[in-house]
Image (cartoon, rainbow, N blue to C red; front, side, top):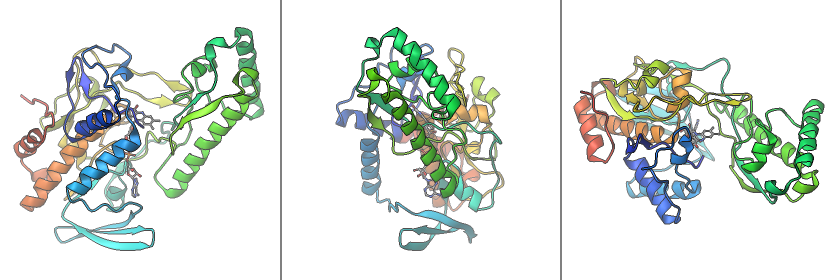
Length: 374
Ligand SMILES: Cc1cc2nc3c(=O)[nH]c(=O)nc-3n(C[C@H](O)[C@H](O)[C@H](O)COP(=O)(O)OP(=O)(O)OC[C@H]3O[C@@H](n4cnc5c(N)ncnc54)[C@H](O)[C@@H]3O)c2cc1C
């Protein structure tokens, strides 16, 4: 998704560091404006999300990795993760490849804690998970010029199409008028979205694209919308929720909403509680001044050695996760996990034993914003 956020809360920046620098560079290189972060957003939190070109961001992130000497191995997936001596042996399979990699530390950023699961460590997931969304934008029409009577008739046709199965209720999850007004952006929900196996991920992508095709074909039958076209389409259905680790600490929604400052806090996170259900989403905003924190123990699988996670698989309950999962928070977690893994590898120890002062000091030296804990 290419609207990373939120880096700012209540008029000041709360997340910076490597992710933020890349977001800024992407906006600069593409001549895109940054939002005015000095203006409070009220309940329109999305106003502080940064609209960037996602592919350009990926190119800059890739360039930074290459310059830092990272060996990139796209198209490979871990098949086994076994402890070996004081570290790990990971078997990776890919296109015409099968390699064994040894590592002192693992940082699992798969979104679903795949490596953690393969290592036999505990994960959790809900019986009913949030739906996914295939993000796209349509154009080729002017919603302001559509005759209100034609719109009313179209809504009736939509209800009939849902009844007949030609459309699904979740293809256009809110009001049709609202959908047309905002170019259909994020307008659908894909129930049962899951990305934990290639089978479920394939099915999720097929379901997303079928939803798009049903919608487009249905709406183009309407004379005023006959020229409707796709202006922008994400390559995959976005998946909100799969597995989270069971960490040394589990962040609860009470921790999040209460702005708990964990004694081992290494990053901030800032977003409304944002649980999606089949029919929509009702964001629950944080109280004025509240800025939640992420403890390093929520990035460490319980009872583990030499492994961390970063991103939406952070150890948290479902409601806390619905806010923690956004990109600025994931970026801050990524930097904190990376620093901790590097320090642990250098000292020949495990993440839980790395002195907090060392983690915080290194993060601050690299431009991250570290929560004040006293
Ligand atoms: C529809 C939708 C809209 C959203 N809108 C916003 C928004 O506007 N702003 C915002 O900030 N956030 C938004 N989010 C949330 C945010 O985009 C994600 O929660 C966040 O990107 C998660 O980051 P992550 O690094 O944990 O996982 P991911 O971004 O999912 O990255 C995981 C990576 O690991 C790779 N991977 C996974 N499994 C394997 C494997 N077995 N082998 C090899 N590679 C693997 C994947 O290909 C992927 O590249 C949205 C999410 C959705 C679904």
